[in-house]
Image 1 (tube, rainbow, N blue to C red):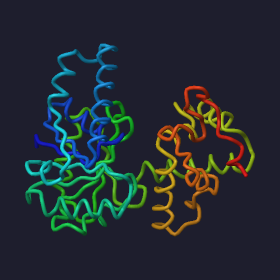
Image 2 (tube, one colour; image 1 turned 45 degrees about the horizontal axis):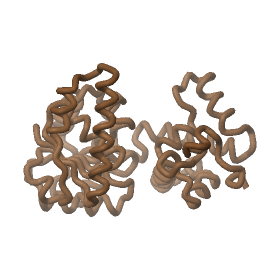
Image 3 (tube, helix red, strand yellow; image 1 turned 45 degrees about the vertical axis):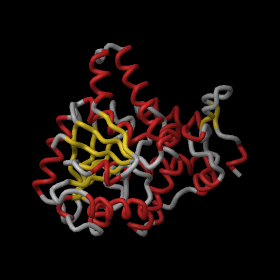
Image 4 (cartoon, rainbow, N blue to C red; image 1 turned 60 degrees about the vertical axis):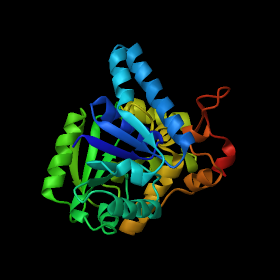
Length: 296
């Protein structure tokens, strides 16, 4: 497999494209928005510049990586020669099902279809295709070029051969693949999201403030980042979506999202991407916690 198509030029998509291209793969980065593609390529370029500045790569490596990426606004055009497609669109089940229906109709019958979903059932996604044996989860961690873990999620019908190939490919990217089975949240988010949700509940109940909660987890549990700051980086809307998937999938109240999280998402306070979440990321108020109005 040498030709890779990545669908979605957002945070995860451009990171996945960057990682494959830096490892020598030819990448078609696909997004219906020219603006998103431009922003995605600008992000990749900035990240490569940082790597050059830190002497992790040479300028020639940056040039070669960028030359390995082609941007495309049409899924049929972008995937026609792909050996592997990695879907990294918004965490919305209907959107993903529609994309995989289109991929199944457009791609070669030999093409492997992967999704970067962090919680949605691989089996459900595979069921809308005529190749469920060739559908698999590749859950990269953010920031993709830096984080080593890739959760490799087998759907009910994913073949041993496809799983073996994707595990091997992940290693060529310099990643550490871990095979898991297809249950809501998989492993990473099944453990992480209840912790984040409980941290939000702790804030909501007035036990401690944002900085205090994060400091306890950083200094007491040796976490590199506190759970509330991590939620801001993931995106509070994404956290809410994952919790909904787990709550619906397990029918267990322990996965019910905290009312504070729900209210913040409704108010558009989504974390880093909106400029404010549990912390304020505007230039004038960086590292200040969320307004008390959301604690009501």
